[in-house]
Length: 228
Image (cartoon, rainbow, N blue to C red; front, side, top):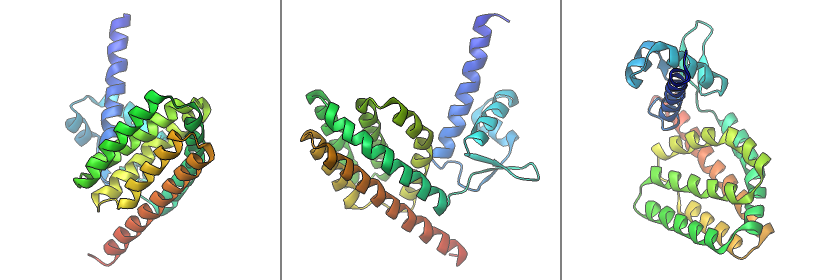
């Protein structure tokens, strides 16, 4: 088999994996939803071979769950998991923000300011999914300028799970103004080179997001139990 064929097959596998993962993260495939290989292959327009490899990768990453009877479903949303993810994020991203405050250049501050502008516009216009996207763009840029490679590598293992929870929460209501104000405070601390202040502002922000996520998830679960 020549190298170009191998490269094409690898791209097919990777693209299938990314396309399926994106649908799970964006809640196009809902938490707890049963899925079948045949339907997924038709949805993505791919053959079974790259699909099965994509499914295996997503099972390993806990986005898909294989039941004892062999059937497949999208991983559920749970309060236990969201607590773990956000608590770990608060520790990692707090220190990332601290280092971002130390490393940020004037150009970085300008880019972060533009991101905050996009965040504010999306919040004011009620575009909650855009608000989530711009928020993660802001967090990702802080990770980049922190230069903490090991921290970022560990954080990236949680990032897409955290994004799925934020997408899920946004589908069931808007974020409050506090989330918008918290991003502003983080930027202010970074611009002022206040390393400890940036760390605390980030930790407070993520723990506040955790509280909002838990409240929303518990409310959704209560409605389902009541048959609403």
